[in-house]
Amino acid sequence: MARKATTIVLKFGGSSVANSECIERISKIAIRESKEHNVIVVTSAMGKTTNQLIDLANQVCPGCDGRELDMLLATGELVSISLAAMAIQKLGHPAVSLTGWQAGFVTESSHNKARIAEIKCDRINKHLELGEIVVVAGFQGITEDGEVTTLGRGGSDTSAVALASAFKADRCDIYTDVKGVYTTDPRVVKEATKLDHISFEEMIELASLGAKVLHPRSVELAKKYNIDLRVRSSFKPENKGTEVISLQRMKDMELTKAVTGVALDTKQAKIAIISVADRPGIASKVFGELGKNKINVDMIIQSVPRDGINDIAFTVPREDMETAKAVCEEILKDIEGSKVEADDGIAKVSIVGAGMLNRPGVASTLFETLSQAGINIQMISTSEIKISCLIDEADATKAVQVIHDAFELEKSSEPIIV
Ligand code: ADP
Ligand code: ASP
Ligand code: MG
Image (cartoon, rainbow, N blue to C red; front, top):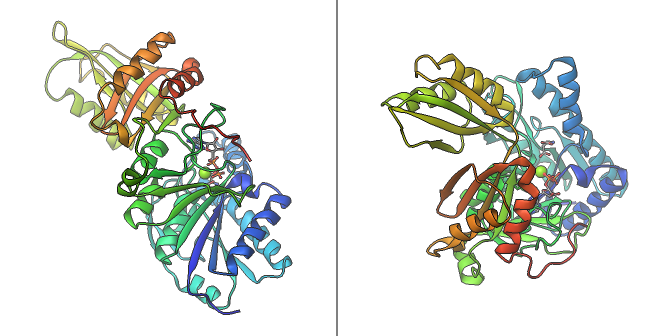
């Protein structure tokens, strides 16, 4: 079997390789595509394996992270690649499985959230020359010093897009457990509509704001290298799915609505520093210390000063809440604050749409909708194509539902999940 002129990358997420039946299904997809193209398959760990490995780690050593966690998490993908290669071989097509490091993924050294520095293509090329389907473990790589790293939760999408770029692939298909990208999480709002197209810019926002269907870094990479990126269902591979395309192509086609999608993030926490001095240098001290501790801060508000004092509140990833609180408490004296409060019962709900540019009234519709539903807004942040509101976590599902209704996103709803 000789090498073909074109290459495609097919990525299968955890639920697409959850059991032997699923693995056989995805093997057939790979073999079908191999009639026309060289095929590189990327798999995630089977089902909920990564969560189970994290639970195990926490039983042995609560809160542990770094090198040993990477050693453990990287094992998940090794199970699925070898099984997938066996299944493909059994169906009569040559295949080989490769770990991230065998496949040439070199990453930076930060454990648990490493970025890909380079992909050395020789090993994969050698197997493609032999006409083999190459099954690569997603989510992992190795540093120049030979240390195993992982790319952050959901990172297999990024492995796939990086391979598509390195091998100048014609297409990168991200196969998952829904039929494509929807106007919101179809498991939260059953009237959610599947989108035929979405722009890179909107998809980056939706993914960063909590829509788990694509890893945000995978969309950034696809935009940078202009990769033909599609999201489709491994259970219904005949369906077209969603194409992620340039904003310009999108504008030419169908940019008719102000809002394209609604995202929900329930993995944030709020920190409030009460009664700090209203003078220069306070914010830089607070956020400087948080930065030194590698804590990512998202939404920030500072209240209007009264009698020379004000309050500063911000959000951080939920897993960093205790550290962020401790960091703020440590500098409380220097900033003349009275106390630090932490709240992990919050959620961030966001609307995203390139169509909201130059369209007044979108923010007011959002606020009015939440107010009519009796949902209090604790913080607001905006950019050109998104508006986010921080609300009580107990109101999260209701908020997504009413916002989805208010912006009429359910119009052409079709049955969603597989
Ligand atoms: P995989 O294991 O295939 O990587 P993920 O669980 O990471 O799959 O992502 C798919 C899930 O993303 C869906 O099952 C769905 O619940 C969720 N999701 C959240 N927002 C959206 C959205 N806007 N469109 C489609 N799916 C979404
Ligand atoms: N298995 C990893 C995770 O669950 C990577 C991925 O699925 O993309 O986060
Ligand atoms: Mg995923």
